[in-house]
Length: 305
Ligand code: DON
Image (tube, rainbow, N blue to C red; front, top):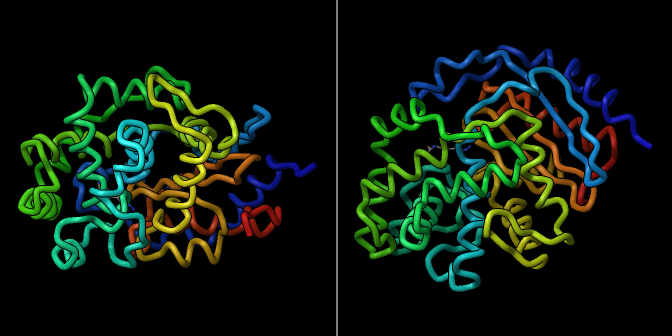
C-alpha cells in the first residue's frame, strides 16, 4: 500500500527548486494579484480517503478546469449531437487561438479551447432554465461543498479585458455556432471560469470522473459510464492545449489545467488529484503543478500507461 501522504510531502519538497520560475496569468487583472508562491496538492481515493500537502485548503480560480464541468452538463443535455457543434480533436494550438476557428468555419476543435467552451456556454444558456444557478448547483454537488461559488470580481476583471474571447465569440456567431447574444455568452463563460475551489474540493469534484464505472448523476446532470470514459479521453488528448502531448508524456493521466494555476487529473478507478501553484509556463500551465504530477506518477508508477 502506497503511503500517499509521504509521497505528497516528498513532492512538495522536490518542487521547491522551481519556485520563482514562471508567472501568474496577468491578462486577467484579478489573477495577477494572487500570491504566486503557493503550492497545494490533494489526492482523493475512490475508497474515500484523502491526502493533502501545502496550501491545499486555500481556494483558487479554476479558470479552464471548469470547462470539464461545462462539458459534462452539455453531454448530458445534448448527447452525441453535441459533436455537430464542437469537435473532439486536439488543437495543438493555444487555448485562445483564433486561427483554426476561421479555417474550420466556426466549429471549434474541441470543448476545452476557449472557442469550444464558448459554444458550451451558449448551449447551457439555451437549454437551462436558470443557467448560473443550475450550473453552480451541479458543481457544488459534484465537489460536495455548498459554499463553492463564482468569484464575480474575477469574472468582471476578465470580462472587461476579454478582447480575444470577444473576437472568438463573434467569429462563432458569424458562423451561426452561437445562438444567444454574444455579450450574454461572454458573461456566462467568464463566470464559469471564475469558480473557486481548493485542492481538496477540486479533487473531490474529479473523483466522479475517476469513478467512471459508477453512476454519474449530480443535480440533474446524468452521464453513462461510456460518456464519462469518453470525457476522460478528451481530457487526455485536449486537456493541456498545445502541451497535451507533453503532459501525456510526462504524467500519463487524463487531466485539465487552468490559468489560475490549478491542474486536476484522474487515475481511473483509483483516485483523483488536484494541484495548485499559480506560476505558469508559456503555454498557460502551472510549472510546479506539472512537475508535481510527473513526480507522482513516476514515484508511484501509477499512470494509465
Ligand atoms: O478565457 C480565458 O482565457 C480564461 N478564462 C481561461 C483560460 C485557461 O484557463 C486556459 N488554461 N490553461
